[in-house]
Length: 230
Image (cartoon, rainbow, N blue to C red; front, top):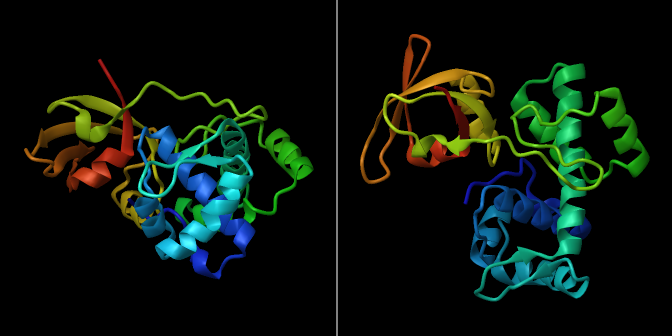
């Protein structure tokens, strides 16, 4: 499971760690990925005993179900809280890129800090000033004030057939390392690409962007969601 957060959760306050847990589960649900306690411990760089200490109050508050060796899932209340955090994170990313001119990687890193402290009033003003954007700079949907989000029709790049033409829609699970690499290659939302070939057995995906040709590892290609063109 890729490490999404730019901050080390071990140095964060307990409340922030618990919010990181909710965010991780919400992002995984967006991509239809199941998350086990072992996955979550790896993502947050926590030992299993330390993670269990953080999970317990979330279960007691009715925000989380599952645990032990089973799959973790957000309850309805947990999803509402997680969607609020996602909304604040992605609106803040928009502020940093659209208004302050930060690059995508730096915007993500700064939003990791701000998502925990944005107030409801600041959230409303931020959305209004930005024109209620529907997606973050990486193309991921911003939940509205009621938690609903519009998910554009798209498929992971690793599922596209050779010779397919497509436009990048979003970068899922936007880890700082992956974002930096994709930005260097110019593989960002709204960029048109062509799939040249796919190696078997989860091998690399070969793509063309303009006159450039790149081989993308299977895991990285799976994070790039595209809209197929006729």
